[in-house]
Structure formats: C-alpha cells, structure tokens
Length: 395
Image 1 (cartoon, rainbow, N blue to C red):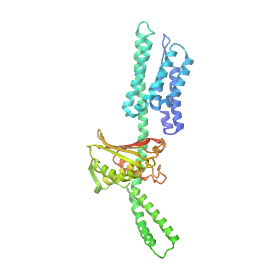
Image 2: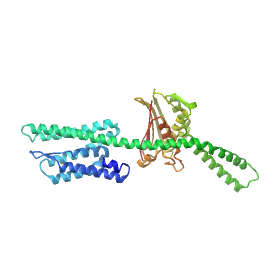
Image 3: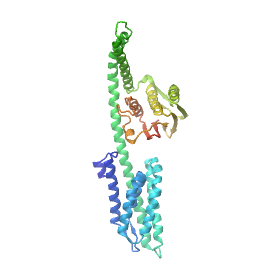
Image 4: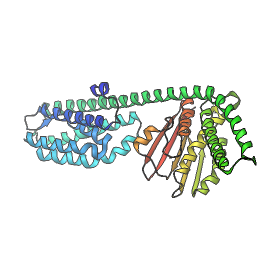
C-alpha cells in the first residue's frame, strides 16, 4: 500500500526493483517471526510472497526469493531443513510454468487460482508434519485449522489488493487516454475544416503552375515538392477528421459483418502485394450502434498496420470476429516484426508510430473509435514473433 502511494508507476524498472525488495522483506519477516512447534517444525507464511512472485513474475521473479529463502532457512537450521529445500525447489520448477496460464485468467479466477495453490502448499506441509506426531492430538488439528485458514485468507486478501491496484492503475491510464482522445476530437472537428480550405486553394494554384510552360525546370522541382507536401498535409488532416464526433447520418445498428468484409476486400490486393495471406472467420450474432465511417476507418488502420508489419517477409493475417458473452470481439493476429512492452504502452498516443514514415494518428483513431463505444483494446506482442490485437466492444 505504501508502494502504491509513493510509486504507482509499475512500468519503471526502478519501481519494479522496489516491488521485489518489498516481497523479499515480507518473506524474511515471515521467517523471522514464525510459530515454532514442539516437534521442531516451524509454521509461517513465507510461501505467500513466494507464490505471488512465481505466478506474476515467472522464473525471473521467483528465483531471487528461492535463493534468499534457502539461505535464511539454512541459517535458522533445525528439523525440516531438507524437506524445506525439496519443497521450495519443487515450487521453483512448477509454479513459474503456471505463470502464463495464471496471467491469462480474469482477476477473479487469478485470486481463486492463487488461493488454491496456497492451500495445497499448506495441505502438503501438514501431511509431512503428520509423520512427526505419534497421535494426531489437539495441537496438530489446531495448527492445521489456523494454518489453512490464515494462509488461504492472507493469499486471497493479498491477491485481491494486487488485482485492485492493477485495475485502478489501468482505469487511471484509460481515463487520461480517454481525455486526450476527447480533446483531440474537439480540436479535429474545429480546426481541420478551417485548415483544409486554404490548403485546397494553394494546391489548386500550384497544380496550375505545374502545367505552365513559362516556369523553369528548377521551379518545377520546387512545385512538385510543394504538391507532395500538400498531399501529405491533407492525409494528416483526414486522420484528424476521423476523431470528430460520430455523425447521425452514418450511424448503423449492425453486427460488423458488412464492414469487416468490406475492409477485408479492399485491403486484399494490398496484402497480396506484400505477400500476406488473409484468413477470415466471422461468428457473431450480436449487434451494436456505431458510426459506420469511423468503424471502417478504424478497421482499415488496424489491418493496414498489420499488413505493413509483414511486408519484409510476408506471412498470415488472421481475422476472427466472434461473440463472448454480451461482447463483440475482433481478434487480429499477424506474424510481423512485433513490438516491445514499451512500444505497446506508447500505442494510441498522438504522433507516436513504430513506422519511420508514420504519424501515429492511425492507431490513435483506432483507440478513439473503440473508446467512444466503451470498448477495450488489448495488445499482445513479441519482437520478431508478431502481434495480436483483441478489441472488445460491449453490446
């Protein structure tokens, strides 16, 4: 909780380091102040931070804790040293393998999953402890009850807090992002039309000059450059105009099938030119009201970026539209150059692009359109492996 108050940005490496320091301190404190049993064993909650680090951080996250745990356990000594080493090693091997599956769950299932792992750890410990009791007396059952309930409850509360913290951070980022999109929408609607008028006039006069027989060859070069830059300026303005508020004349109540197929068909020649094959699946019966022009432009930007990411080597672009509960889901997967985590975090921001010639307004338009529909854009990507865009739109 102190970390959230003072260092709420999880993405900075220095802050991640502080998180692991906090986890290490928590584990060591659990081992410093355990409950010591008469048979020589000790009971504590050291595996709560250990399990959390393994499930959220994988092998990299849990290995420092594994080393620290066994070094301190060796210092403590006493009965159960060998068993502790074997059990912690088993956790080191098995738990990080479950990390990917764990992170793919929703937050409720992650809490349940982590709590079950914690309870299983206690049950195995109690089974091992049983052999040291000649008779399962009241002390054993008291330890069993309190250890099970405390470990399970502690894990459930801790995971709930972690998930709530992560949820709040995402909501805050989404709020700031939505505000930026709102400002961009207002600016685009009020400014773009005013700028386009003088551009159109200037472009017209330059085109007249370009066909004149009295200008020199050097002047012709200057005019050609000017016309190219005006075309580029018009392209940027068109992207800005895409952020304007939905127009009632373009609103439709549909299931995305017509728009999805339209976009796929117009981009198929561009895909073939770049050695990209498109696979398409549609299995959605849900409908939603949306601005058809904006949705088409959103899908064009998304698919065009995916194709361009594969233009060097080619590949397969997979498009799948389906329903999930009361949500329409658009899943776009490519085999392109991929992105780093930092690049993913920058997506949707004005004038940020992974392409040298890009303006970043295309992806901002994607995020803006989906935001207006109260939807979400989730991105999974690995460098040189490809990218998966999952768009969820509530109905």
